[in-house]
Image (cartoon, rainbow, N blue to C red; front, side, top):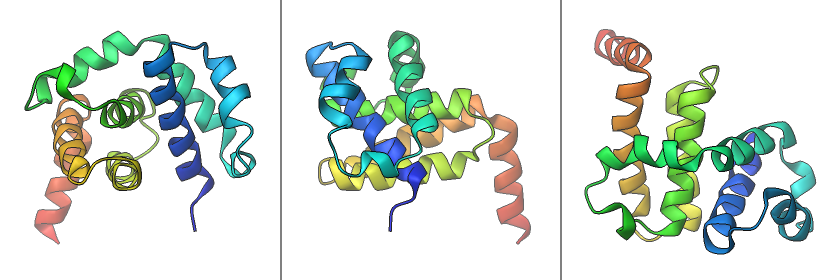
Length: 149
């Protein structure tokens, strides 16, 4: 069973994906394509809006933060993987109240649902590196905790 937060992330990824392909306004994407989905009402709408508008307000900065961790040219990253990475990068950078392993795991699961065969591995690798950069203290504490367990 999907949580309201997972659904919010999935809908945000769908909105980001559509924006990449059509350059529609976020309000238009929400009204014409997402709200008509029966499961939209089961999503955490506040989280959905925070992610969608957060990404679409500054996609270039998020893309620049992600690009150093790609193992291929940025233009070769599929639009689905790019949408997932933008969603997760926004959360890692701007939603510090959510533990980074949760954000990465959610992105991996969404990549398994929407992405290519091994897309989740690529997403995981990029986000692990980004998390180590933008949440260095939290990553170090998590690693120390695992070491001591």
